[in-house]
Length: 557
Image (cartoon, rainbow, N blue to C red):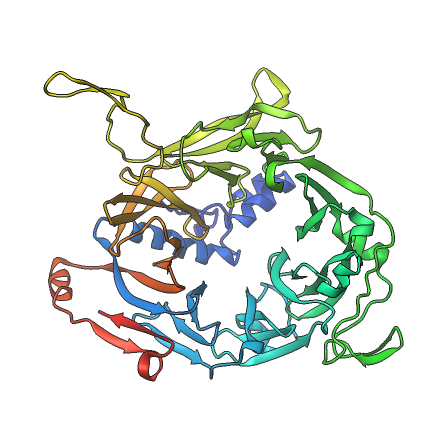
């Protein structure tokens, strides 16, 4: 990418794009160009230039990715922004350093303090925060005993702790309403004791939701999701981007304005750490044993924003202008996706997407996470990136058009149902090969690296018991293959796999039977031929994170 330099009237150097600020008279265009770092005085320019340089270095032919670390564990392994967590977040390893190093390791905790879920918090830009610790990355975790803890991401030190509730409910899930701004804590499905169910008592409150703003951590409110309000067939609930999403057993999905609900049904606001008197109980907000008051009481059904029926409640919103993706609510339509306008539910032209693939695992579809409004449709041997545009013949209708396609590297063999042997005998096959036949290259994972603007795709081929995988980097704009990285470890398609591509690191987490977990870390290196020769003679060293390898062991090369 060339970066020319213009000259101003006085002969001084003018950064590229600086003159465009005056030319961009449209406010929306000006803001869009600022967000993309077109002006040199913006804070994002240096970062974008660095990421562009890293992308060019990474895509060079001489650049390799080497397996620098392998580890095995009897407990799940998690990864967040250069940090690998073991033993239920008790041990943290930095994957950014040239050699993996332990950031912290806590003593083993009892089962009652088990961490159920976690979210990484990062400091918002341009805001003044009350504490110095707020400017550093931290990990918010939810424990089995309904404690919400904010831990230092580098040391594991407890920075804040909030008690959520007593035995009335069991909080289990953390999610973002607005990323890095508003956090939702959701309970497990509320169930009555067996004796109460036998007595014919019905459970009306199905879930509890607690809402927090983060950095600084502040309590917004807690509410209950009641069948008496939302209906007896209610099965699940979620909150995203200010919308309360309610799902029903018959495939129905309903949307409500969550902010309007919070404002209308808020009985009394409360701040963490303050004394309160609630229903005759006096206590401190967020402290044991009182926890948080349920101060948002929905007394009648809120105004409905939107509803749609979809198979297995699968429903997504995105694109520009706004569209949604569903599967018609019949089993025979599984694998068929309808793309419709959110405004009037009108099906877009070419809005029915069906790969007609014959495979054990279904294809999947979702709105592109790069906020371009495009759609990614992934099948066993084909990836389609689709865009929403105006129909040339009817500007009031939107059309789904193909932006680009990525095809698996397969042999061009004709799959005939009839073959002739050398002796002339005609043999008819009883079945055809599946599209995700393991002996053919098959797409398993598709992800997007936002800082480098790359699509990362894991493709797998399994011959016998030995499966081989490679990670391909494609240009996000045009789909051109830029680099392919072989993963050295064997890949069994029957196991569960996660692959993370984070700047100059590739991390593969594998779950084997009997809860055995493995982690493989690759780092980017720019080796000369001499360095390659030397690296082949490096011995493998076994290192344990705790004496006796109780937690896990890894191998340094």
